[in-house]
Amino acid sequence: MSRDYDIDTLIERFKKQDKIALARLITLLENQPELALQIFKHFENNKNASHIIGITGSPGVGKSTLTNSICKKLIEEGKKVGVISVDPTSPFSGGAFLGDRVRMTDVSLDPNVFIRSLASRGFGGGISRAVFDISLLYEAFGMDVIIIETVGVGQAEVDIYNLAYTIIVVLVPGYGDVIQMQKAGIIEIGDIYDVNKMDLGGEDIAVQIEMMLDDSSTFQGGWRPPVSMTNAITGEGIDELVQNIWDHEEHLRLSELLKEKKKSRFTYKVNQLLFHKIEKILMEQIMSKEEISQIAIHALEDGKFKIYDDVQKIFNKIHFEIKRD
Ligand SMILES: Nc1nc2c(ncn2[C@@H]2O[C@H](COP(=O)(O)OP(=O)(O)OP(=O)(O)O)[C@@H](O)[C@H]2O)c(=O)[nH]1
Ligand SMILES: [Mg+2]
Image 1: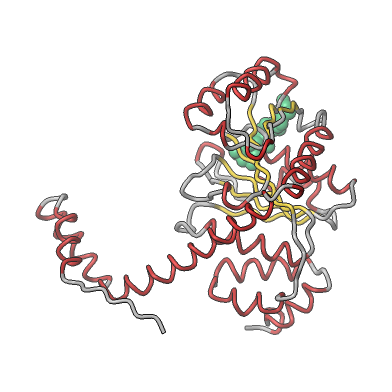
Image 2 (image 1 turned 30 degrees about the vertical axis):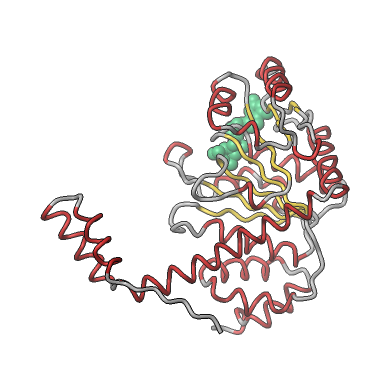
């Protein structure tokens, strides 16, 4: 490890608000999550608490452009913002790993903004782990706001519902999205709804969402999600959207809900850490890589459905005994 990458040196630079050190620590954690303990022990006394916003919606609705505009507004308000952009690297969106950063160049050079893109493919389910770790680093860095941009809600990759305190569901003119949202039960999930691309219409969509919300009886702690309309490119409507974010933050803070959300965020992480460790220990003890590939070969040669039987047979031979000191 070169001197530059020495963790203690990086932490010193990080504490002096060095963005390059922040970027390097993120990369270190991404590649070697086991370093978390070593890194985070330096921040034990960090009391900073960022407000965490999740921005979600179908591909192409304008989440990145919106994030950019929201960042601009937050900078004006004197805030420091950390962005985590989970790019699905979908073949349909061009698989642009740097795409979001390119679109967000507007604010990415601002000293008060830091943007990190993560390609969700290739992390093997580790993406939400990485998102959590980055959010902790952002908090230690003193970010007032963290924005997590992701496609969809509650997908296998990032469970934004467990990570963010304020969730913005972004829609665009055209009914397809609203119908999908109803089907997926997403209407329950947004704390704020935003109809973006208002230059292309959308009044009727906003009305429809309002109507759906009127029908919905489960408003968390009395919060009735507001519906805003924006043009993320020109910035029209952004002030109102950001105001809605602060109103929701205040609502959470004044009720006990913020504490609950924070607890969920950490419970989720604890589960993840435990699961990861248990999985690792069990997998090593139960089956070797060779045995696993033997089962696969057996199934391919003798019948695909053999995998269920073979795995069950192995489990039948195991006697679990859990001891705690
Ligand atoms: N007309 C119009 N176009 C917009 C608006 N906001 C974003 N766009 C355009 O919509 C396209 C997609 O915007 P993005 O911000 O990349 O959308 P996204 O939701 O982040 O996309 P993915 O990350 O690929 O899911 C871009 O060409 C934007 O310029 C808007 O308010 N009006
Ligand atoms: Mg995007």
